Each structure stands twice: as structure tokens, then as C-alpha cells.
Length: 134
Image (cartoon, rainbow, N blue to C red):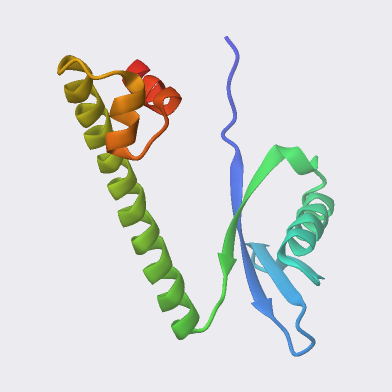
């Protein structure tokens, strides 16, 4: 029987410093901390993974890192607002797709050509055909 070891996860805390670099800290245990930085988030992520691998004496692929990016409250609010709006837009897009298909199907059942159905729906005949094929 093979015993499967759970992958360890570490929280990396990213903060902008006075030079606009991202400072990154991962606390592994009391008095065991990996520290790095980077000019961009991707560079900081790469460097903290390397630093943590060295600290743990483990391959970089053997653990997960969870990002904790510290941002001011107004920025966090703006991001939450964006995410909410994006979710609503995606839900509305799914609704549009459903009603578009229903309208195309109704036009098809009424005997209209794909070209005429497209004209009424503001689509090309080829797009109507794709919508109906879903």
C-alpha cells in the first residue's frame, strides 16, 4: 500500500515597499521565514518559491503557495466591486445565450430561413446555425 503525503501549503504575504517593489514573507515556523522581493508580482512569486525551496530543502514543485496581497481598503473595495460586476455580467451573458437560442429555435420552427432569422436577431445566418447547433 502506498501512503500519499498531503501537499503542504504556505501563505506568502506580499506588500509594496517604498521603492515600489513587492516584499514577500512566508513564515514556515517560529524563527523560520523565507523572505524575497520582486519588481512585479510574477517575479516576486518566482523568487519566494525559490527562497522557500531553499529554506525547506525541497523541490519548488513539492509545495503550494497561497498569495496574500496586501492592498489598501479602497483598492480592495474597487476589486470586490469589479468581481461582483463581472459575475453579474457573466450571468447575464449566459441568460442572453439561452434566450438567443430560444428565439432562434422559435424562428426556425416558424419556417424562417437562417438568413431571415439572422436578420431579425441581428446575427448572420451562420451564427444562427451555430446557436441552434448548441
